[in-house]
Length: 321
Ligand SMILES: Nc1ncnc2c1ncn2[C@@H]1O[C@H](COP(=O)(O)OP(=O)(O)OP(=O)(O)O)[C@@H](O)[C@H]1O
Image 1 (cartoon, rainbow, N blue to C red):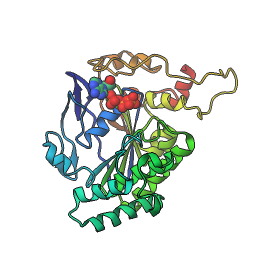
Image 2 (spheres, protein in one colour; image 1 turned 120 degrees about the vertical axis):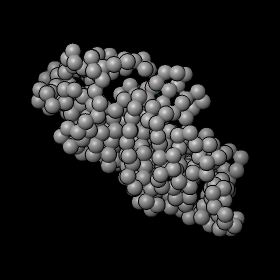
Image 3 (tube, rainbow, N blue to C red; image 1 turned 45 degrees about the vertical axis):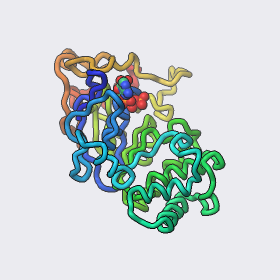
Image 4 (tube, rainbow, N blue to C red; image 1 turned 90 degrees about the vertical axis):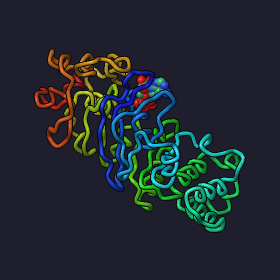
């Protein structure tokens, strides 16, 4: 798929499949195009954005679909797990009523049946029945988080899309949300697309990962393959910058490593590898030709130099940081 905003192509030909029941992670620096890509799975592009190509949800084409057709899928076939639990819920209705309304909006069931389904969904995430009558502001942050996950899963969609669900949270709350999402997936069989900056969460919770840079595919495959033995220097750089990454004791700075430089402006460069200016392994060919995804060592990688990196790419990058 390709997504343009204001005439500038910011997602530049990214393709992937999400399999039933799996956790598929989208990672990359800020501005890489993760959110736009994830939201296109719901047919939810921001105003001014144009999606080209194809996004199919169990065969239903979302690109170019009318809003009414998309709205019929929301909640029932695909749900967004929002980042902000307070603004995701209406402040003027009890949470149980909001869930019951969500059930009735997609299923032709009685009020009593909708309330029962809402109560069951709240119970699944650990919100006691006695709290179903509470307004969002009457719930603790943790309880609200549980309620929004219940809201996203109450109609048992095939696909959950969680856009940085843990970014603004403290570590305890972060673990809670990731555990709840895992439990709900197990209970409902939903697949989960997880947009995150948190590679440790990807390692712990995802099956497959797609690394994006400047709106392009960098590397994708099984988490264990891509994160343990990255073949793209950019993936290796991201891993080397983790606070938990092993670093040589000698000469260790008190600052965490970073990848030098910054991503290019949206839409640039027109040709060549977008990461080349920051890449310690880049050569003239990298600037001249745009790399396309190709299979290398058990994953797909968009890097001309993937087979020719001296030693493990992680080591190469750690030295250059
Ligand atoms: N509504 C919008 N209007 C204009 N530009 C946008 C809009 N949404 C996204 N963009 C641009 O599209 C590019 C990709 O944005 P996107 O939000 O998908 O990145 P991201 O990888 O999710 O970043 P972050 O991790 O910061 O959320 C960025 O250059 C961004 O500035």
